[in-house]
Length: 119
Length: 135
Image (tube, rainbow over all chains, first blue to last red):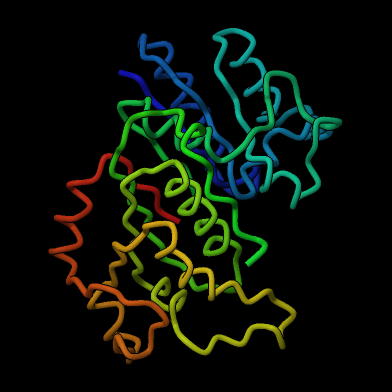
């Protein structure tokens, strides 16, 4: 199946990003296609490369970047939501790109299922 | 209303497929950003000519309450944008009957025309949709 994934919360405060990451990883391992992961609301903060969690904790931003590197997953950050929260290309982690909300609509159209992760 | 996204000309209608998008708004208009940014998602889906429905339930019914005055709390009043939805051909607006009545509201309290549906009818409406985005 072809999935779109919507991530609506940032790392750490909510488990949203962890769940979305685990879902995406599991879907890929089962042979499904991930059309795109779209980051909205505070979810854009998952793309901040300046995050430095303690070394004994998981690094969600690095995990997402690794997924993009290994599987070519398209990680798209909403530009309007990102600019509101001070996120721009200067601090964007590898594998992410900033684009418009139309990319979310396209994911809804192209994917068989759009799966939302939120609070 | 300068903060609304422009309606794209036809040549930007690049997807060529129309799907049923349903936005389910469950949170109060202020206190969190969910209502404001959900509205931006609604406008974009409409700008790309999708078949958009919007459901207001739980405290989300307050999003379309008339006479909002959040300016005193330093918040931007974006409630008039709901009135602009009609200009984007977003005319399928639904309110949960249970949520409305639990809060002592009637359709006279809303700043847009809505269809009131009970939860069984909303469930049927959501089952018909192809993309449901809740916030």
